[in-house]
Image (cartoon, rainbow, N blue to C red; front, side, top):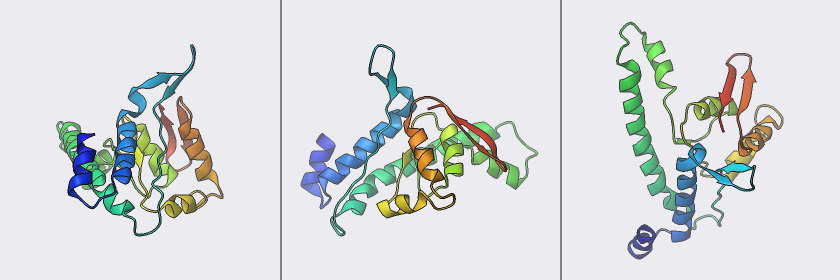
Length: 178
């Protein structure tokens, strides 16, 4: 609350947009590590869909910038720690093999990814994952970009609690513990 008051008092950012972004970030950060007990037998993970809607030029993009910057900074730290640990005992790998190892680093945020890439990223992310689109139209257009609607099915599956699998000829199977 203090951060939001400071934003409201000391910047031109729209505090509602900043709060919406923070809410999504907190949900993505907690992600798979916490579930709510809905009924005696049913638990739901903290999966939140958040959309900032407003007319063009109302400050949505600038209001999201501080949050995206913080996420990129933390992701960079996580990637460096992962690289140090993953490459500590390796000496013979080619640049391509090193790049493949580093591509498995856990992530906090994804932008503009195919569902195949998103599946692989999500499978190694220990918490949740923030899927960020600056324009809602970008997400909507991607829902049928390659496969006449398969992306929509993927996102609906991602919403459900419990593990799920994506199978691709070239990439094989990816299991996501949701």
